[in-house]
Image 1: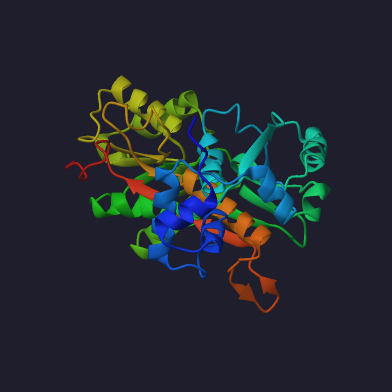
Image 2 (image 1 turned 120 degrees about the vertical axis):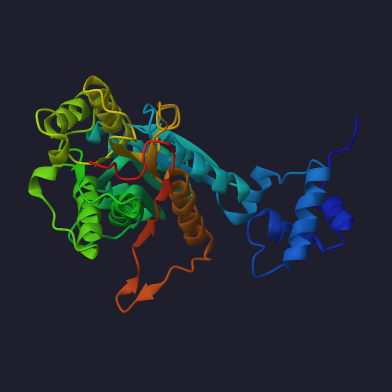
Length: 353
């Protein structure tokens, strides 16, 4: 049977020292080992099928190299699992593993989930939510390095770093896309009024119209919820009963499911998308936005990027390599990740009336 490769074997193949191999494969190569040498070490480790001994590593570093993740419903949700996927990508690349617990939206289970993970000697904690929302941070998260993803500390003096999408800019850029196509009468189905994300997207919409010198019509903005049926009803109110000159030429939606409802309403009324009406979504939900007919133009929520950024922030804190910018009061507690415009077939030039 072939002998298992050692770190010394990797060092010899890469032409570097044994300590350089340790630094790179333990996630501490940047700033200590030249990039070319790091590349050679990783290639040699891959060729030799070498991986560090996790138990020996944890004994040397007095770390478990395990990160605990608590989610409100991400694990059982069809929406935001990519946050955990992105976080796990970064953790594995730096020699950590993740353990996930889902409370299924029962806040009473938060404290016990945190205690369970701390009993397993995790090195750090992350809390992940479906949809942007405030969080009453479980006390146990304050005793170890911790970070929040897609949520934020709702206490008067927040203590934990949070990573969230830049919703205002997302709403503005979605509106700017329609403005660039010539639309001036743009309606907005804005989601649920009690959602923290909805008013931020409305703010972006208002900012874009203001910058274009277009007054906001209050009858063009409605908080319609998040589901297909409410999108259908909201669109029927906007489109049915008036003359073509009185209806909006484009409808922005606060999520892709609302946009499906708008498309169904347009079909009911014999309107063609985008020839008669442009439709814009938000989220870029898998197997919805790209499979609609016509395929949906939308703002993609940066879920995987949020997970990656949050895990990077957390591991940097654990390993003492944090480069977070500081203010006069201390390190900043917020990272905002930009959304991305995805242009497909549901938006087009403003129709002639």
